[in-house]
Image (tube, rainbow, N blue to C red; front, side, top):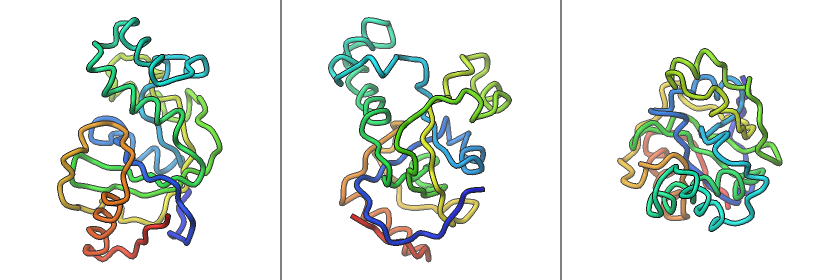
Length: 187
């Protein structure tokens, strides 16, 4: 397992992610030092140059209407294009639990169909494309309670992948401190 104590580093961005429904893939991602959002294979992101182009393709290829494209594509774009080495990741379960915190350690998102085991994917996806959870970011996980930590309900945590603003990061980390976690916000 790839776990380190939280140390002093400058973090550009904080993100929260749900690793499948109720973070089904958390145990495996924690063990293998990675995250995956489940958008693998929807688009060849190397050939999409703008968020607007991604939205257009989302609608054109029948994934949803313009309104849905606006909501989903922003998350997809951020996952592939805005995450950077050193960014901090908070894995969540539902709207009230942090399962783990880590730092992106790789320079790029990469595809590895075998990183998340097919047995886990098959059980979770019930016959969906096994490559769906193959676009990976490597993460170094910090020491964190195995059962996670309950925090105050986060109304905005209905999406898979969310960039957290400074106020939200401070509020979440204050909640964690109130639960006895010795964590610090770095910017």
